[in-house]
Length: 598
Image (cartoon, rainbow, N blue to C red):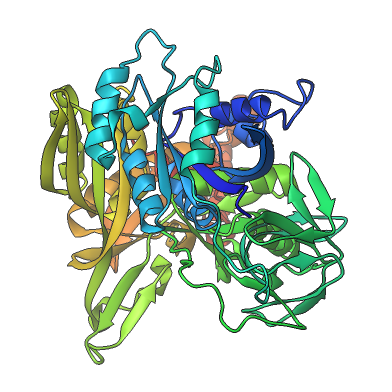
């Protein structure tokens, strides 16, 4: 056990985590030159296309130093704020972390956020400055920033380059010397923390775990602590580039188990694994449940595919424990699911994975956050509202509270004015402003979560020319003047396009949505009235004009009464059609509401 080291790599987006992981695998000869490719651990097509890590990836490496053989378990983590739950799970299975900072960009918001996550779990932090081979690198300034942030000594910071391989030896040496070996009792009853799971259509579910106490052997009868279900360990082993079977996985090691589990509900990330013969007495504590930030409805385009969508969502949830969902129905879209996501990128990725991995074409409704409503009759009772259509009638409503977040934005000083304007426009309140260096500022704001759900991140990147970095954490609920805005097509409410918005912004937003829908709705043989309404009050209206068929074209010359007769007949037909005609809302109209500023 003294020779095992468990560590993860944490950093902001695009600071070179996956590239550095490639060099570590290459240096320890864990993979052959033939298997090596850029971002070796990112095995999803989506990850390669976008150049981001979405899933944490665990892999075991063997390393020899001064004649001693060491086992290094590496977990590569995502950097984007939407996947911070993946990072927190990886950190729970480690004793040390490589904190990577880009020498050209310096410390950014997500670096600080992930560092605090690691410090909460008492991890040993090894600071690494990456990309020192770049012409724009500022290694000395970056070192000063790291010393200010974590208070380490200057000589403890390792300079490296994931691209050229400079400094990789020093990183491996530091991991062996500085990261503590896992603590645990090999003779105690088995106690293992499940930190991830994946679905295999042939062998069922693979659960990944870290053994804290005891050991797990092939053929043991094991039990999941929270669900109480029992299984046979058909195969146990360690995580190399491919799974490698072993007879036993001992204390402190990271491994996998295959036990023929078919149902996704039976494996819960954060659960404790133990044996039936000699069970441990308590479950492992300190593992947080995920808190979704953004809610949206996902519906199958074809209502017959509802059950297939449910299966696809369950399999996705195994692979991505931060996805939550429950069934719901909509008058416009039929049966579907109300899903909770950690952010807009997370929602986009889930939608794309459903289409690629499960061939499901889905419609996503307008995203929103969860609100708290209080009624006048029972002011102490809280109603949690995840869907705008659940909001009680205004006459019985006492007040509505919306979630607020503390946003940390790190940007260059020249963009401070533009960033402040954006945050104030989004109902933000400046709480603090700190100059980290002469040209880098950290701004702290309190902003309603609903305001950052749509286009905040994109606009922040645009106004700061890509320099600003952004991180947030929830701080509770505050009372707000919110109204429910409905959209009506020919007087019929489209519940999938309803939204809860701030009263002061309702008129502008209503006008924008009506104009957008006017462009996108296909024209019919009759006029379509597109209206935005708050309660019974119409606040905006646009009309999609009818397609006019020239019924008098066949009358060449002749009496005017013949033409009038045909036009009257057409007029009656149009009137009847308006009464029975349905307006189909195309898929892009639901998504257009998100991109009103384009």
